[in-house]
Image (cartoon, rainbow, N blue to C red; front, side):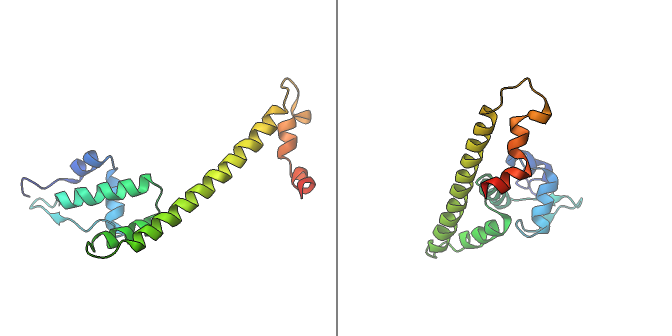
Length: 141
């Protein structure tokens, strides 16, 4: 192993990634299979470190693994136009904005349900349990 090679534990610490996750990324091909040292330890390079940082950033932004794979493939084609990356990012943003809208509606519904509760009663006359009950769906339909 050269002085520049990183063991899996070093790579994990530098990227904030669990060792089991690094192995999983290797298994599914997001990270290339690393070289092995004479002692059969995985030996990672600076390129592996950069690639894992890229993967971690994509995951932090909520990209699914298949899209990360596509982004990695596209990022290796430096001279190509970035139209495909732009489309992927725009589609991902649209999904995130839809989730935010859904969560905002959910929060409003829960605020409304919670506001109707006076507390101190019993479950049999609880406004929150009543609002969550199946018959409420039928009434709303």
